[in-house]
Amino acid sequence: MATAILLPGRLRETLRRHPWVYPESVKKLEGSYENGDVIRVVAPDGRFVAHAFVNDRSRLMLRLLSFDEGEKIDAAFVRARVRSAAQLRDETLALPARTNAYRVVHSEADGLPGLIVDRMNDCLVVSCTSLGMQKHIEAVLDELEAIYRPRAILEVGKALGLRGKEGLPEGRGYVRGTPPSTEVQIDVDGVRSAVPLEVGQKTGLFLDQRENVKRTAELARGKTLLDACCYGGAFAIAALERGAKRAELFDTSDRACELARRNLELNGVAERAEVRRADLYPELRRLDEAGAKFDVVVLDPPKFASTQREVAKARTGYVNANAGALRLLGPGGLLVTCSCSHHVGEPLFEEIVREAAARAAKDVQILERRGAGPDHPTDVFCPEGRYLKCFIARVRS
Image 1: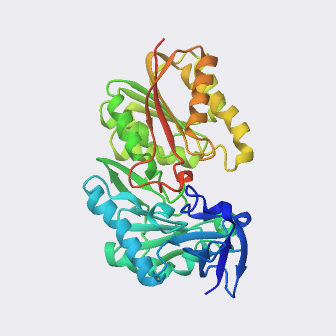
Image 2: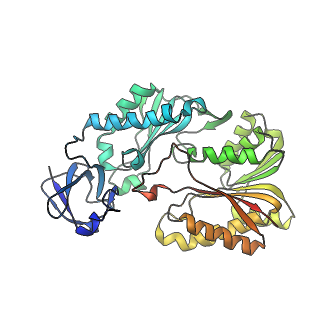
């Protein structure tokens, strides 16, 4: 087995178990290997550190898998980790009692680097952005079939995205079972949604927002709501189902607007909602100029910063969007504002909300700081996995 020798700085206590090792932390690679293989990782003095996937073409040269020298990394190892991840969701969190759509495997947090698996009713959607993990994908699929007996398993992923950076081709599409003849319908806390698996966002739906959607719906009873960047309308529909008075929804995508309309109809709340295609900043400005006011504004835009270099531009965008949203709220109004850019950390996001409140001349209280649901856990050694921020704020005056 080939060996990677780490530089001393990578062995600091706070870094030693971080699952990502960059090329600049590797002193040298010894022995013969192919990218995607499992190799030993050692300290400069030869002490064992971990087993890892290696890919010398990737920015993430090593992805640490196990810190037990005696552990064998094989199909049984992979299947056991998939089984443990499923037990967390199905038994510990008891999610099937609430929904038939949730995350089954969440990458490094479940010890399966680069692997995402989402359950969508009786279908499973798999996304893999690690060459090493892709080499073990059949073991993953075997265990998923044994646990869930799905109608079909779909493998997604663009070759121009993270898969391409790992040297992986486009996702293969349906790899197991019989593809559904129509889009899949899911149920989350009694709210139904249509999920276009092959053309939807991420793996078809933003499952990470489930708890934030539920909390927003609880706070929106009897209120009017604006759902900006609505995609399939999850926030607005859950709020209407739980007693919101009326909702307006908009998105820059015609396809998203059509999906939101279908989901409103599916839940029997379309008569209390209006959906329109509109761009974020012009629409917030138009509503403000028209004197529109709402009791609740949900602001859940797409990722503004995919890299650290984009953070400054993203900060400006978030400030402008949040200031525009706050202008639509009167005293007592609630802003549910989100960022899925992991390069924009929680302290920076709070700075953004503070600057936006100053621009909008609003006194604002942050009531809750929230994130992704428990089916999207975070590895304590990999805080980068805590990407989703959701603040619920109230306009005091």
